[in-house]
Image 1 (cartoon, one colour):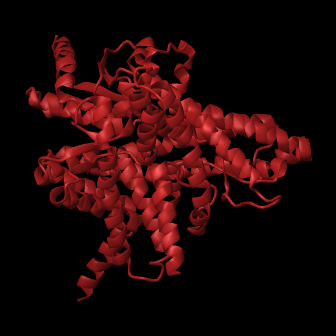
Image 2 (spheres, each protein chain N blue to C red):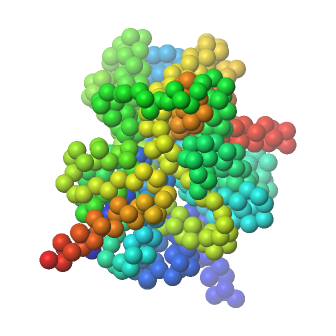
Length: 441
Length: 101
């Protein structure tokens, strides 16, 4: 009996560490694909280490962003939040790691069942977005409806919702994907689909696909904007310098410098912390890609056995080759839309308050502008040429920034401050969940 | 052993697609699993990976070529295994024969 208890105790301890849990999921997948033993060992350890790297990166990012909050408070009297999924996920893992990992796994099974038995025959292969969706749904439900309920109910309901998202959004994108690629080999598996569909649908009304963005010639130096991580670091540095300058104007250089833990001058700190933020996101990304490198191929191999006729739902850059200029047009117009939304959020903010009618103030996140804005550009271009791309991109920035602002309240209730989700579908589903859970409270 | 780097913007979803495509294509062409290794990377850190061969989208091909001596294989449709096979296998086989000599 004692031995049994001891074994159980060890099992429970192992299961409570999400890193090990996800490692075990990867190991199961690798074994089921009959990979050689060294590949199984490497894959399992790599997945676990990826998880640990993810939390390490989160610490770097959080340390780098904390002084910015103080500077913005001093300089502008407001708090700005950056919607970066990676950061949010890394932080939520500390609170709900085990549940999120299990939801991640079971959502995939729900996806397979739905693909097998409903007309939405899609298998969602964008692992990092499944992880983000699992984090958001589990986080919001865990702190509201299922706060005192059993863990298994939370996991079951969250997995059902995420699994449904994994076929529903690809299904929405299907008619437009056929217009873009000319085939129906694959659909969109990326949670910015609300905007993609909006861009495709409105594009048809405002323009003509014959006025394509691909006839425009862009100067070569624009290339650096296509490296999202670099663009992110540079923009963060600029935001930091602007906030720093404002704080110096209000409180003087010495007081502003005290916001940092280092004795260097304020502007040097702004430069370094801005770039450190970008560097930290790079570390988190390394972790995420180590986690997924073996799980996604295993999922795919498994899916092909269960639902042989399924259509894969893939990450958004698969459409980039179908409109390389459209990506840039959508990206730039999304930044404009995001800045417009930020202006609205500030305008609706009562003096001195952190949240107004439109929620919190959302700073521009280049990663989302690039990927969701760029993809909306491709969708808009396919149905409405450059006009469609501009409109699609603009609406992306506007919509995701506004949704991130309003859902910020629910997100801070989870106990995670200074970060929230970005991509539009997370905002849409998150708002619905926050609304429902408010009724149940 | 040939080290292959699958490169995309962030080193996440689409890089992983390329990795899966490359692995499947090479296995189907009868290459032993132990003869190659595919790693996913993002465009910003790609330069430090030092692989024998890059596989990437047409979007990033020119940027990689600027600073790289290793061959760069470009794919238009990241999910099209036939396309990957057509452009990758000849370059891969040449690398293998060069490594053996």
